[in-house]
Amino acid sequence: HARKKPQRHAKADDAERSALLADALRGLAAPQKALPCKWLYDEAGAALFGEITRLPEYYPTRTERRILQDRAAEIGTAAGPGAAVVEFGSGDGEKAAILLGGMPNPAAYVPVDIAPAWLDEASRKVAAVHPRVPVLPVLADFSRPFALPRALGAARRVGFFPGSTIGNFTPSEASTFLERARRTLGDRALLVLGADLIKDRDVLIPAYDDAAGITARFNLNLLARLNRVCGADFDLAAFRHCAKWNDAEDRIEMHLIARCSQTVTLAGRRFHLAAGESIHTENSHKYDPEKLGRLFAASGWVILASWTDPDRLFSVGLLHA
Ligand code: AVJ
Image (cartoon, rainbow, N blue to C red; front, side, top):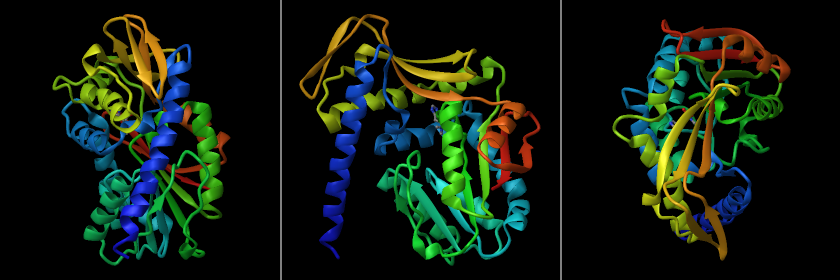
């Protein structure tokens, strides 16, 4: 048993390196250079994201937590006894623990994540708060098809997709994801989904460009990860963080902007950046209730309830398959 662990991690490291490298080579060769945002979350990135969630400017986490605390019992009643919670992108397990707290006798908690470190953290957090709930972690990229543990049997599945992670997808990707999630979760499934709402850009921009510079470090860490894992030679000081509102697409975009003309080498390939050229690193789409309704309907989900906070910053929906 003691031997298996390092091997498993070595394999995971290789898989991570080749997938990250493939994404980076493709993304840096595109006319608009881009890197997929899922790579923001290595250990350092996850720690920085944790700091972001506690920033005064970053309203989503505390707002959604409050909504979930207020509605956990209602959600638990809708789910009934013996349901299993399947979380897409496990995060730190804190919100899952709140959700499970409202559920009568949950059958299991199934965190799904590409990062082993996050799976461990979520599993530990939920096990500490709900020691009688079995935890069945799944190491997988939830944006791609994956199988649920067979041990779930016929338990009703309650999908959990908090944090407005849905906003990282374009609306068309979101619809594909939601349709697939419905098939993965099966008959009688419920889905609890958090989505950030469109609001004044004076509130939105600081949430993604905070005064303490934590989001800038979070964004730049993507280049540090490429250097560390793939042997790239990005000079972090030659880039600056940028968050901007794209009004046509209703989304915040994060970019890394080259401060000067430069050439970067990755796996023997050279990529040129002009001064001011950007690498697009994240989309965070914002919704209004009508657009959310259309998205859910298009992907086959029916809205049972939807809740927001008094300032209408954030929305949590309870859907059924
Ligand atoms: C957790 C992915 C939803 O888009 O608000 C926070 C990530 N990026 N600050 C978001 C994020 C910059 C966050 N998501």
